[in-house]
Image 1 (cartoon, rainbow, N blue to C red):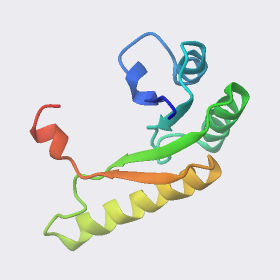
Image 2 (image 1 turned 90 degrees about the vertical axis):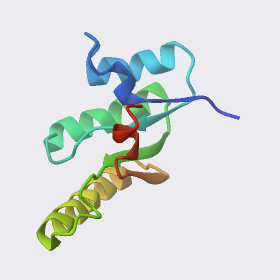
Image 3 (image 1 turned 90 degrees about the horizontal axis):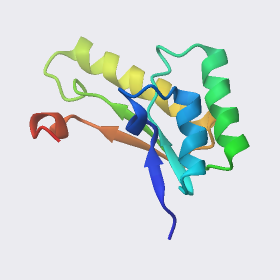
Image 4 (image 1 turned 45 degrees about the vertical axis):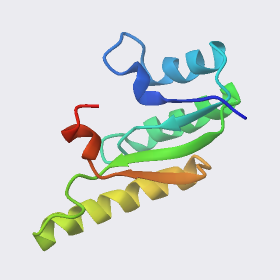
Length: 112
């Protein structure tokens, strides 16, 4: 069994995304899930995340995308969220991620 942490655990703290990856390894985790939006991160930032995970020896198990509108009634909204999820999938391939974790939002409504 391996112990993993999602990178968003550091959100809202003074720890940067890259420092969070390094600290994840330092405190004893074996793997990491990456929650970072490839539509907001430029190529250099995406590469830095990939390199930080590799340098820390943290395999990326999942790339996480929250796609609240993937089941929307409006075709244009669904199309946007599908295209966005594909961008996350491409990002995950670059990270050698094993999965794309598609979160459709129920945890938001349950306040988790």
